[in-house]
Amino acid sequence: MKRLKSRVDKTLEVVAQLLYENRFKALIILFLFFAGFCSQIHKITINTTLRSYLKETDPVLQDWNYKLEQFGRDPLSICLAIETSDIFNIDFLKKLKSLSDEICLKVPHVEKVETLINARNIRGESDNLIVEELFENWPQTQKELNLIKERVRSNPIYRDTIVAQDEKFTTVLIKLNVYSAPGDKGDVFEGFGENLNNPVPTAHNNINSDKKYLTGEERKTAVNSTQSIVHKYDSVNFKIYMTGATTNSVFLQNAVMQDLQIFFLVSFTIISIFLYIIFRRISGVALPGLIVIFSLLSTLGVRSIFGDPLTVVSQLMPCFIIAVGVGYSIHILALFYRHLDITHDKKKSIMHAFGHSGLPIVITCITTAGGLLSFLTAELVPVMKFGIYASTGVVFALIYTLWLIPPMISIIPFKTDIKGKQEKVEGLWMDKLLAINGRFVVKHPNLILITAFLVILFSLVGIQKIRFGQDYVKWFPKDSVVRKGAETIDKNLCGSYVTTVILDFKEKDSLYEPSILNRIEGSLAYLENLKVGKVFVGKAWSVTTILKEINQALHENDGKYYTIPQDKNLVAQELFLYENSNPGDIENFVDRSFSKAQLAFKIPNLSLNENPCF
Image: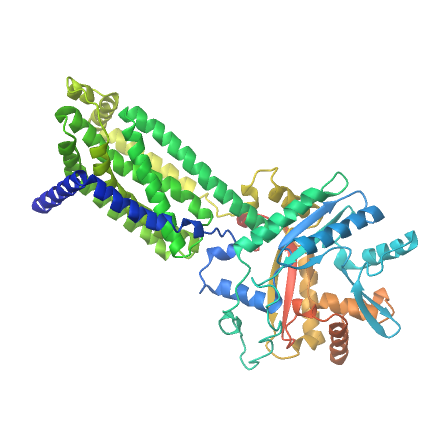
């Protein structure tokens, strides 16, 4: 073993000598190596969506993709809540329409904007079913406006979705395209109702892999465009709050990028200050700094080459690479400076440093990288990727430490003061402090063991109180756009988070059966009365909600017919009439074979440890 160690030490000394003597060749090769990775950084992206946490083979993600394929994107992609003294003021309504029109015109990737102006209004005239926008005919008199107001107040579906109970808040729901290529979505019913003998269609056999979902950059463009329009319309009596899954994701993405820069600069600055205090040399700051920068940029380049976007967890990587890169270089430089002050020979000093510290650094690199690769077993993709790229950064830090320091030392001029230097080094306050600590530990082993045992015991008690939780809205400051928007909608519109459930009844035309529809309606009623701790369901809806509106409209708009018909043929006829009157809307609630239904409900945005639903 000693012979092997001696050989490795000697080899590392030879490596240092070759790099020192061939400094320009070594630096040119190093620069080309670094430039190859660095040239790819511009391609890197950021993904902070929930789907970025899951592997493509994860059943949860496949179910989510299947939901998007069948029923489209959740309408709360971008949600605006607008506060005013009276939402039925005509001037407010005109401004609301103008806002909606401008969003449709100027915000890219928008499929539909749903507001009080174009809210679905189902009514009957004679034997005809009319499905139109609530403001299909703009009111010219106060009487006409009052009629619309009564329609809103008499229709339960409007409450806590588009209009708040106190009628001082209304929402603008911006539904983005599901796919990256708007208008090229193919037949929206493609694959619906096929293979009905297959009892459980899954994402494996229903999702068209050629279709690409809206990219992070496209979502960011949509949110930024919406925000610029919001700033234009926001005023005292037209106060706009902004939230929604896509909005939150984009703001989180911006925060990740900003934090990456701040973390790196702050960490790098603090460490640089301490390096200068320790070494009292510019080279003692510059060389570790170069190693850290080269390692970090090379790691980002590798990540970009493999097409892996940055995530929330990626914020930890710069600090980690700084700690590792600086640690490696300190071991080399500390020995080098000490030996240089004694021998006044740069070449011998760097060879001495490599021979004595090179092997421990290599072993440290191997063990650290190996430990990080254990993250490959993680189920969450960001954690798994952190293990991969943090270990990559560790290896880069080793490569640049061994490759960069010798040629740079051969170029940099060093001043030394041999006389009395050895005594000064041995008398450093840090050495004295460590010596005192060592003597104390040796003299009082029982005290050390008892203290360690008590600390561990106390920690074990604390571990029992740890609870898992994630509420990324509360990661933002209280005055941030995202947090204010979510909290305002939670308080005034009974929830800002929409959960959807796909109900699969297997058989074609199952949703014509009154017994099944009654069960769905019973589920909605149960949900709307559900309250567990801080969690409550503010609103729930499904195909039965539309069916009750249709039935009421076909019975002279009589409120007592706001019920589900108990005849299968009548249900089929009413849904057929609705589909003919408003083609394209029904697929948001059912599939074409009428064997599956989507049930949606609103809940407040809470941390998972506060939410018993999870």
